[in-house]
Length: 102
Image 1 (cartoon, rainbow, N blue to C red):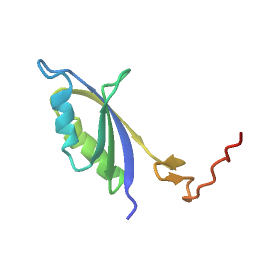
Image 2: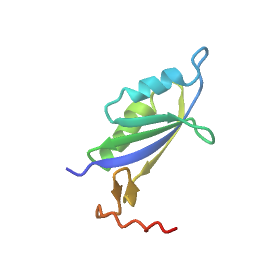
Image 3: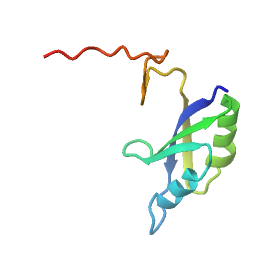
Image 4: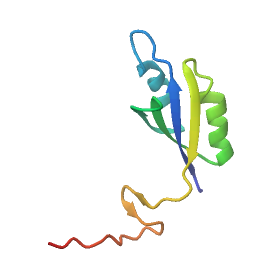
């Protein structure tokens, strides 16, 4: 099975007494969510998700994430090709790193 991976930027409204925590915890409980980070900059949460298809991820964003109270906007970025990931270098899984020389 070929999973689809995406990164989603969420802009959210901080809540009284808990800041971003309550929304981040709620987002993190979805089975599609692999990781969730509080960020500095243009958006508040960076969410890594996986799904069975582009439509699956799009539906998750439209029906689940964007409807959470306090979520102001979402921006979804689909991962098209992996060049480097933990435990893997190169799209074919090879490890052709440059040699370290003194």
